[in-house]
Amino acid sequence: MMHVPFLDLGAQYRSIHEELAPALQSVLESTAFAGGPFVAAFEKEYAAFCGCEQAIGVSSGTSALWLALVGLGVGPGDEVITTPNTFIATAEAISFCGATPVFVDVDPVTYTMDPDLLESAITSQTKAIIPVHLYGQPADMDPILAVAKQHGLLVIEDACQAHGSEYKGRKAGSLGDAGCFSFYPGKNLGAYGEAGAVITNNAELAQKIRMLRDHGQSEKYKHAYIGWNDRMDGLQGAVLSVKLRYLDQWNNARRERADFYDELLEDLPQIVLPREAAYAQHIYHIYAVRVPNRDALLAALNNQGIGCGIHYPVPIHLQKAYECLGYARGSFPVAEESAREVLSLPMYPELTIEQLEKVADALAALLRKRDFAAASAVRAS
Ligand SMILES: Cc1ncc(COP(=O)(O)O)c(C=O)c1O
Image (cartoon, rainbow, N blue to C red):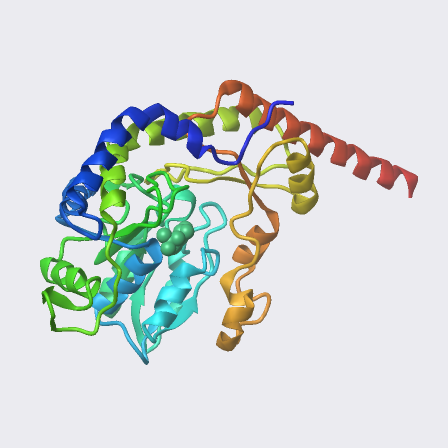
């Protein structure tokens, strides 16, 4: 039986191992393990890639979000608006700087922040907005930036799933006050361990974040801020520099595979396919469809050796950890409905045509079977 894993990091490693080995060797020989020249080189390259003046390499995407918030002065008593259908790190970063997450629902087509709902969530406490570029597609940034400007709010982009994706020709992460990236291994640009980055055109903010990630110091043992240890590893900097050279190629390969899924699945009436917004260049970190009976379908696909995921099964406002915010079920109907129906299909640049066809055929067969079962049940009643 042909197995189709959800992700295949090994295939990517094998395609670049000849370049990775000497890059890692250089770090080992120079012993520049924590921060240092390999991180600095990657920062320059990533800033240029994003069309931004500054990139600061940090220890994870979660840290990137936290550092951006703290660097911009968000703290206790402040509210930060984001969406509930994101990875919990977006909300955690807000909580861990002492502020309160406030949610708004998402657009039913892109699953990103619905700009029309923003105004109603703004209070005198609101300090910032964090749109999440979910699955690799940017949120609709122009209306979000317009509302932010009108109310004097900061905008921090959670671009943790959107390396190289574009909004009206500009790179995700480069549009607000700061953009935050995760280089968790499975991301489109993934490290071989934990890593992240903040990008910004604000030199003062960049300098502050450089200090905050290193215990608030700019000089050894002179601490101007109460910071934290959020430095990026030298080994990760070296890996990311090698992989960055391939990012456009890999993103294009994902886009081609998304087009192929679209073609193979478009005739199935039971399925809702992902759609690229007119303003966007989607980089398909995740190819998420919506299906009826999602959990049964997921189990059946897994049984056939097809690895699928759910991003995300429980929206943040319904997580036990965030009961304290007091949101009831039904508060964000679009996010809640998508949490019940979304199914992430295998997606990575090395997927073969045969693998894509296997996924699509299996999905189609299962959906047809279910329809047939439902039709017989109606006839029998
Ligand atoms: C939308 C989003 N925000 C934040 C994060 C946190 O990144 P990390 O896992 O690198 O801390 C992730 C990654 O998992 C993410 O997908």
